[in-house]
Image (cartoon, rainbow, N blue to C red; front, side):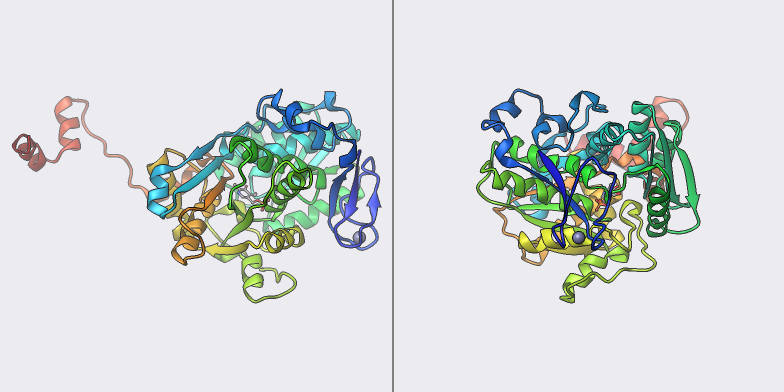
Length: 416
Ligand SMILES: Cc1ncc(COP(=O)(O)O)c(C=O)c1O
Ligand SMILES: [Zn+2]
């Protein structure tokens, strides 16, 4: 029903083999399905199940679905944002709130499939390098499956909420004195030498779970395809996965157009945005990536080739935004729409604002921003920006005084 295929040389691989990249040319692998063997009324089949990752099991690379390791991932809300739309100058702006997933980020979509795959392949240990969310998610799904989890993180550069998630779920957490790119290099090498299953987005099965974001958007918009999908980009797995989801729907005749994929990177970690702007045919990596959006603080995105193809095939673009723009977008989402996201997620909205200002988007276009992770994961970034709430005596008078400076109390009745 499915196999692995190299995106560069086309070599095919047995999906029952533990393999992450093409052994012939080193290229990235992708999962291919035999569409002729899918149920003819796939759509009706899907409608019988609630919105979730596993609703789409016919297009997931799992043979023994009874083994599935699940915490109820997917089925996240797609919110129309009227107040934010006004701010941005658009009429049809939606946000898909991936912070609603079990561990608070879109990674859970990938991990439910990836860890199920680990179990199916008989692996008893899983590992990843992480900027935080991958480790939080993998730790939870490994615990659910009863297998061991090892995570490597860049020391001091993982948001507090994510670190404690990995710890409470019992992962073996190792902080390295280096960045994410270095951590990934080490963990890749360890997984090739020992029977430990790698669950970074290099793993093609994990991305299959993440492509369900596209399937859900199509179902939530009743078959309508957005004009633009805006996604924060780090290791570039998610933008590639979402694009794959839409192209599969298109090939199956379940949608009749494709969206443009818009990737957003942080200015200090923007290898893809910079390389595309210079019209390079490859991506020049950034050695010392830096941004307050630690989730996307990545200088050597392993999936760059898939992502660049997604952007080019969809006639999309990759833009970069400053830390200040990210924080402003985070505040806008929280105060205009009541949605609290972590800085990396706000990058999508910050990027959208920039693109709109440059006139690269029409006000009538249907746009979906992917909000990748929950704001509670990174409380310190908020504490750094806002003054501490005022403290007063425990009396009504003191509270009223604090709420209204004396002048406005006198003025208030006059306005009535
Ligand atoms: C909250 C958040 N947003 C965006 C990303 C970027 O996703 P990708 O690495 O697939 O590009 C990550 C990755 O860690 C993340 O945690
Ligand atoms: Zn190859």
